[in-house]
Image (cartoon, rainbow, N blue to C red; front, side):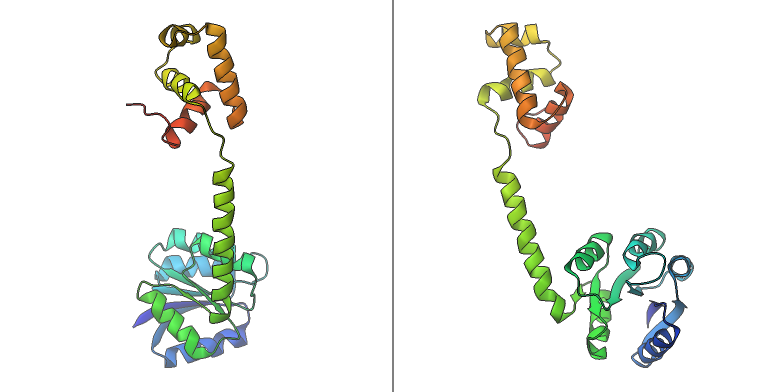
Length: 216
């Protein structure tokens, strides 16, 4: 049987949900009505699944997700919520939840989501799936915009950075490139201005990260 922890701060709703899930074939190993109890139960029972309400008093269920996954890394969290907020959906996914089901969804949809997540997949209520796609498209467009605004270094500036990475001084770089020491310093100043950085080491790290230069 699939071992399940049910977390909701409304006792009557939690009891009814627990009963229905047991009838559906889940082994509800524990219930919790608050954040601290949820984390403690997850750590103690190490359930396969955690069905977690987002909106609980005191601390957001979204904050609990990270705490649960820290103490029970093999437990998969499915969020059950009345919220249809895109922000809550994204924060929940970022925190590590593998499912997001709204409370107005049919019970069969909830069971299907739990089974899908237990099987290694992910699940989002149909009414939230479209929002997830919309937000994903927005994030991709934002990423493309950031990429298009990425500062472009000239070939000479990249040469200078490569020599900086080798630990050479401005004078040594000038000698290697047949330019003056002041010209080298101007190149470095321009590099830092373009990248919005404050030191040579930061510029070198940026260049390595962007595969502009290699330290080998």
